[in-house]
Length: 361
Image: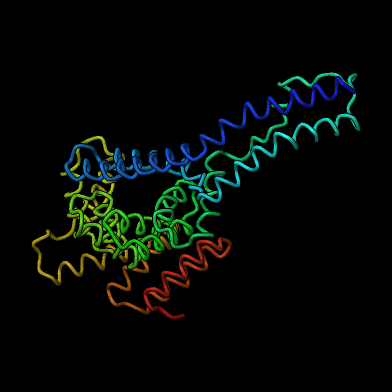
């Protein structure tokens, strides 16, 4: 019995020796965490400043922001406790010095077996869960925080680009919308919202997305993201000359290492090929209109003969709507629905586009 009493006292002493310093350091650690979050917020502002001065490219700025926001997610796991919480934590810590040893001894006396063989560390590690990534776990924690604090605009702003990286585009669009509602619109927020809307629509630049990109461009005329998507929207509308001018201006201002350069060059070449036998940019309005109608008719024929992607069909529908050929647009909607009858996501995108354009049938 003396041995058991000795082990009990020894265990209690060990628990006190380990946990007492932790209780004293708890408030200091949370204060340090708040300081870390403040530093990360300052770093985000510095990245925006460097981007506006042209010190870094937009792709470099985006990569830096994602890394900073990832660190903010890690730092946001623990909340700042109040004084009552700290006192409660200390009480729990010191109570554990008594409860833990007594419980451990009691359990061992009931079920302990000195003859049980050891369990190697490697075999225990094999049983650890490996399917859930660290990022997913952090997202779950932030989501839980936002359910409890839906008015935390900064939390929504941190979460929105993470949703995009995870392919959760509808949730990303919702997060950006909540951010703008709570914190107000900025060029970066508008651009992020617009890009999420494009992802939701399968690559179609809707009117809502176009408005967000225009807001971004008004506040940041050098934004390659806004310029890219506005050019893409013009191309999808069938406005080849406008799209060509926008693509070329974007390419002329490129530094040379942007990831979108090859795509923009290919789009410019495709437009130039289509316009090769057509009238020049100084042609009268009626000739330009005839040229655009010819391009739309060519797209219609290609989709009839070869089929195409949902983006191609959306471009045809929008082109007919821009040309005010609503009957042709309605027929194109019906044909697109038929072409993607087995793809519910594509049909939903076509329906959403038709609704946004006010088409019936």
